[in-house]
Length: 67
Image (cartoon, rainbow, N blue to C red; front, side):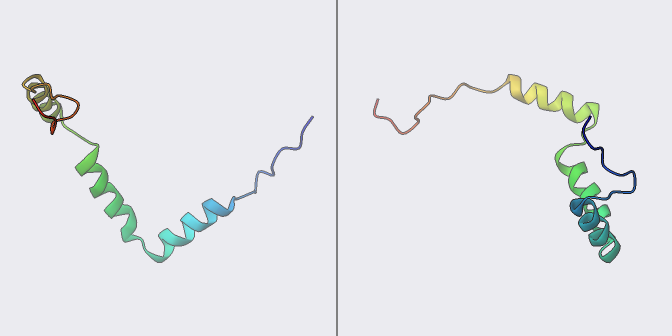
């Protein structure tokens, strides 16, 4: 059986993140704002995006070619 880490073990990465947030607590709010911009979308926004995607015109692989 292998050795299991201690229940009190805290990785260097976790220590770094905890120290960073303790020094700069505004990072958490900035992260939330960024996530809202790029990832968190309302059903209406998603529906609008689907409609826009349906209207796309296929583009040729190389648009600067001689025709």
